[in-house]
Image 1: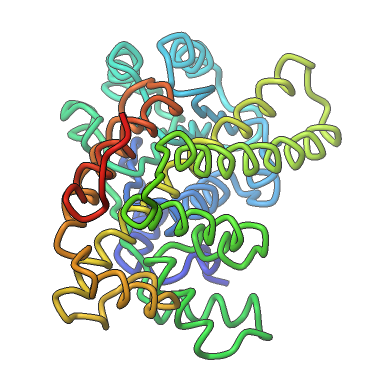
Image 2: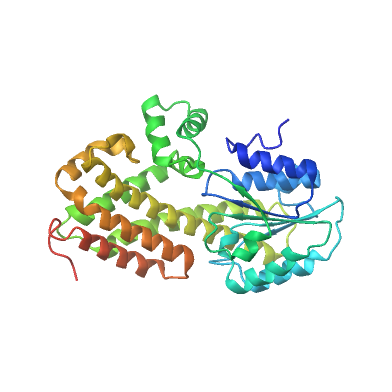
Length: 362
């Protein structure tokens, strides 16, 4: 059975990982690419192949698996120091010990410097696997010491097939629209199939349109839509993780940390996903205004996009899209207050439509 059968597409990444398993040699790997395209699944499968027990690796219970995830906004030096301490322990069962660092792009500078020392001269039994959604925040010295394993956005066909398998009751038109909105990411597709998430998407689009349609627009109300979605996803993740840790024999501190990590991670991912959907809406306005309707992301809302773009909003939307992208980047890289950052974003977006949407609230 193919080791990476659960990972759709990604032929180059699979080839590199299979080659590493067959030939050995490298002790540090960096799986990188957009969220929701199979990096984590592949990382756990790779660790399972190295340790000879994928079931326990996926369950995170294998004694020779060391898992490091950010607690809160970043991975700090103390987290890497704990990894370094463990690095000098020999394997308990397998021939290797695997150190899996998720969201590695969220290491702060001190943590990255500390990890660099381990990447330079790891013990012969250690394999360090970093997973990152982007390479930009990682120092070049870390990149140069890892075998890079790139992951790409999935084809629309692959996403359609996945959605059709998960939701056979959906019509072909619905599947196509959802696959387009997912933009090559299965995590987005999974969320879009959830009726609660679908309603939150409707609320987000309404907030996006209110920026230029509502004469009484309030930035705080639009920001609250994104924050409410993030809170809802965080609460769901907290509940799931609490149910999971109850079945594990973990110290209470470790269990609490796992629950907090899951909650904060879900809140953060949903907030960033909401911003990406918001940016896509404004870029869709530009695309429709330019007559390139086949390229829109929100294909199921094409009539609204036509109406709005036809009212000359499309020409002004590029500035709003750029403001959203800058806010996404700032929230990804810095520990900002999400509420204040989002309110500032919607003020900027309103100004981008100045002269079309009416007076700007102050």
